[in-house]
Image 1 (cartoon, rainbow, N blue to C red):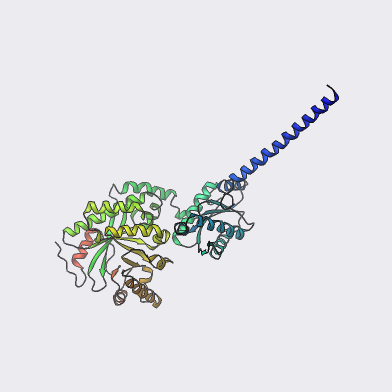
Image 2 (cartoon, rainbow, N blue to C red):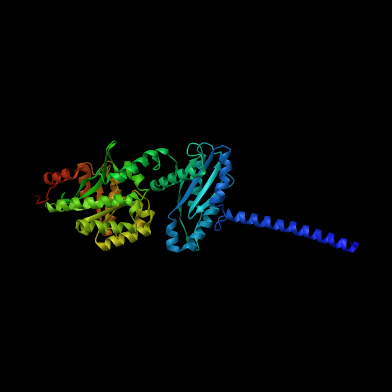
Length: 466
C-alpha cells in the first residue's frame, strides 16, 4: 500500500470511528429525550404516572417513610362543560404552576391525568403531610386562576397515605389515598388521612357487600316508613321510605352501616331499583285500602345519572303509581358534585311528572347558586337546623330565611328532625309546608305505619280506611 493509500485508509477509519461515536451520541440523546417524554405530562410539563412509579419505587425499597398526597379538583368538570376543554387545559397548567411553586423542593409533584395530581414527600415528619396538603389547598384558593379573562375559583380535596401503616407498595398507597380523598370530598373537609376503619375495601366491608348481593333475594332487606304531615293542621301527606338490613348475624343495620360501601360499587343501582319498587308496591297496597298518600324515596348521588330514569320508569310501570305522588329526595351534596348532570336529570324527571326534593338543604356551602335553574319542587331543611330551632335563635333565623326564599322561588319546604312540640309549633308559625320527625313518629315497619295512620291520624285528617 502506498503512503497516500495508507493515509487515506487511516483517515477513512478515523472518519468512520468519529461518525460511529457521533451516531451513538445522537442515538443516546434521542433515547433520553424519548424517555423524558415518556415520563412527562405533555400539558403541564410535570411528571406523569410513570414518573411517579420510577420516583417512588427506590424510596420504598430503602424502607424509609414515604408520604403520598392525592389531590382532585372540586368542580373542575364545570369549567370544561361551561368554557370548553381548551379553557380547562389552560386552568390545569396554572394549577400545576401554583402547586409546584407552593411545594418548592419538599416533594415531587406529578399529574396522574384529568384534574388529579399526586405528591410524594420523602421522610415526612409527624403531621407534616397534613400541613403541606392544607398549604397546597390554600394556594389554590388564592392562586388567581383564570381562563382568558374569566376568573376561576377552584377548591380541592386531598387524601393522605403513608408507607408502612397504610401500605407497602405504591399501588396500595394510591388506593388508600384515593379512598381518603373521596371521603374528604364527600365530607367537604379538604384534607383527610386514610383511616382503615372507614375503608370500604376492608375485609369486613367486602364481606358485607358480598352478603348484600343475596340479601335482596333472601328478603333480608326491608323498608321502614316515616310519616310526613302538613304544617297547616297536621294532615298526613305521605311517607318517606328508609331502607334497613335485617342481617342474620349483625342484627338490624341502618343505612349508615352499609350504604357508604355500596355507593362505591354498581350494586347501588340494584339497591335503588329494589327500594323504589318495594316502596311503591307498599304505597299501592295502602292506596287499595283507602290510604291516599305520596311516597318519598332517597336517591344516592351515585345513582343520579341517566340510568336513574330507566329505574324510575320501570318502578312506575310495575306498580302503576302516579308520577305526581312519587317524591325523589336528592342530597344537596349530589347536586353540588355534578350540577350540570343533576340539572339534566331533574329536568327529565320533572317532565315525567315526578316530584324532586333537595334533601339536607343547608348542609352544603353553595346551595343558592345551584338552585338557580334547577327544576325541583321541594327543599328539605337539614335536621341540624331544625333540632335546635327553639334553643338557638340563629337557627331560627336560618330556617325562617330558607322558608321565605323557597316560597319566593315557588318551592315547598319540608323540615325533618322535628322532635318537640315547640319546634313543630314554631315551624308551623314560620309557614313550613311539611313536617317530619320523632315528635310525630319514628320510621315504622309497613304494618305499624298503617296502624299509626289509622289510630294517630293528625288533626283534621280525613281517612277512609278499610
